[in-house]
Length: 364
Ligand code: NAI
Ligand code: MG
Image 1 (spheres, rainbow, N blue to C red):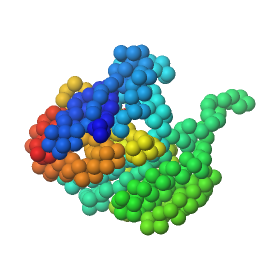
Image 2: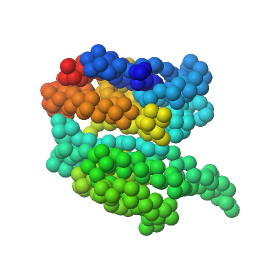
Image 3: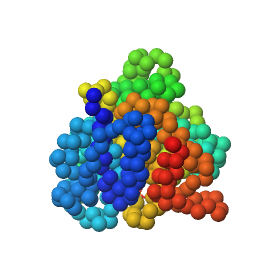
Image 4: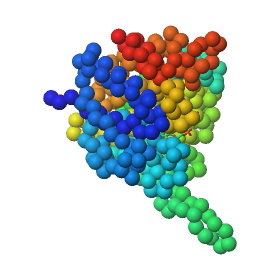
């Protein structure tokens, strides 16, 4: 049998800098854990535009459809800000999400003990926090028609449409219930069924899907209350499932409970492939960070933890994912900090590659 395959798309700015550390970790798994991957690397975003005049070449798109998982760094940067909308770096990312049909976006908000002081909340509210937000990613108000800015009488009107089909809700719900089953069997669904018909349908479909997962404790919450509860008592949640718009906001909010952007991974999953695993792309939540590009300051942990998610969800290597997460935790507990994690007095920050060294040493 051939090795599992990974397509690496480092992208722009700090993307290649953080991805270089992940590549070292992938190599470590091949050498030390007998877990070898077939890795290929290609261009996305501004880097692809510079080479091909498009933010994602068709050949790269085709490769992404063939591999077991895509790992992406980040795209964009000031150099590309004035490009036409159709060739902007972000379009490369959007094309990947759309053509791979990645409808389920997993955003963990996990608080490492060593960083609990970083939270904007009191330490006791976030210490040990470990929640997962599942955001529907390919439908809802960001895609619904009609949309646009139209003339109406003597003024203009801006229109977007929140639209969800039952099947779109159902597949997002199933992916959240599947996750709940391998976590703590607790799921909270958030919408605004009090004021939105799409929310009424959302609640109905999630309730119907629940019948297939009787072991999971399901609750429903209005999304505005959910926002309050997330900052009031976040540990009451385990898995949260919500639509594209609410998920965008709630996942950013939950993420910030745990500290730096440099720590946050994500997974975007689609329908099962022939191997039974979901089509998938893994990427840090942060962008290309042009303000620190080329200075060896970037924190590679978000990208490293994204690879840990790949181990868990694409390669069925949950124990190896635990191992990598434990290595990151150990490094943080040792006080190793990149510049974005500085808070304590008298700590000298390490560089991107020194953080990579520390994680590899902890893995050994
Ligand atoms: P950003 O996430 O790139 O940076 C925000 C702030 O966080 C900056 O001060 C940056 O230095 C810091 N930061 C981000 N990641 C870090 C890391 N790993 N270690 C240490 N510090 C880190 O967001 P921003 O500045 O709004 O956008 C910059 C560019 O990135 C833009 O072109 C934007 O379009 C693009 N972007 C791309 C995304 C993606 O590829 N998924 C997501 C967000 C933005
Ligand atoms: Mg957002």
